[in-house]
Image (cartoon, rainbow, N blue to C red; front, side, top):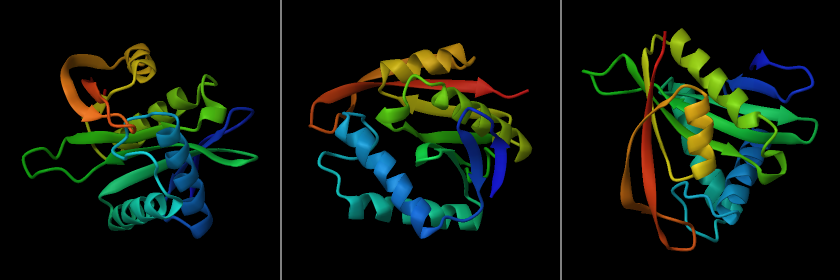
Length: 178
């Protein structure tokens, strides 16, 4: 595990492998986000077992080098995470995708999302990526991405469902890395 930043702010770590304790912590963040209404590919209620199964698949992608997984931690454990999907089609080796940028509700509005995004961009640069893309259905996340220099491409109405089943719009962003 490599520390990307630390201090009084949460530590941001790039995971080379994922322990059982980290799987439980990541699952807790995912379940909390779904419980809080975030449209992050899962419907409510999301069981701990299903959340852990998702993170086991992510861990396999980390082990194979297909994705980078970062976590934000404080003294109480994992409070946020983000992934950079590195494996892209043959004609897009320069591109990565930011996925599952999640912050536990106990840690929101403390700058955790911004720290995770900065670290994700740094990891993408180190892995030779010059373009990142992402999508979100969260107005709060949209503000974070725009403040961080991401460019809004547009929105698709009714693209996904919120955890309770209501349709929601999804907004797409990109960022050129220098």
